[in-house]
Image 1: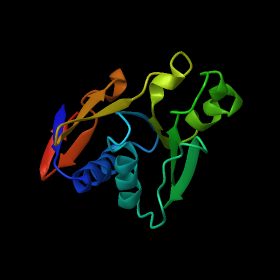
Image 2: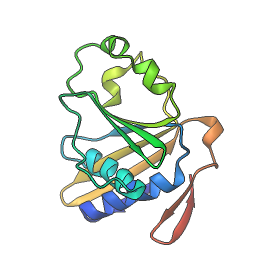
Image 3: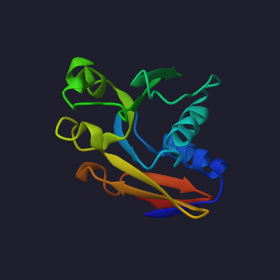
Image 4: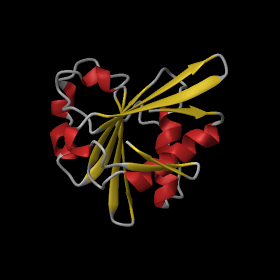
Amino acid sequence: MNITLETPEDTEALGAALWQALPAKCLLFLYGDLGAGKTTLVRGLLRAAGHQGAVKSPTYTLVEEYEVDGRRLFHFDLYRLKDPEELEWMGMDDYLNQNALCCIEWPQMGAGFLPTADLEVRLNYFQQQRTAEINVLAKNRLGDIKLNWKNNNLLL
């Protein structure tokens, strides 16, 4: 499914819609070039959850942890990862086994170590046009995720 994102606010709104649609335990891969809006989308997820604080890219820390109203979100940025085995050393399996939404930017850097995501969002931009391509990858989630986007219910 492709969605046009006209502004950064649209990207945040997509994140908010995903927060409402995704189950508490979910693995979400975020793809896109630098500046495509991956962290903006996560900010939208967290704002929809009620998080009032700053939302920064975990480029240097690799992971930022949030808990809002009893629901957990782990935001990973693997851009600076040198070797996928580093994920084992940082306890990635422990994060993924928790009842949490795990959002991973640059998941291709963890190829061979990360499991298949439940859902992926590919943020693209060409000239002034930004889009989000959303794909459900987990067979048990197909047709199970209902996204409310601009007053339309979209079945993913």
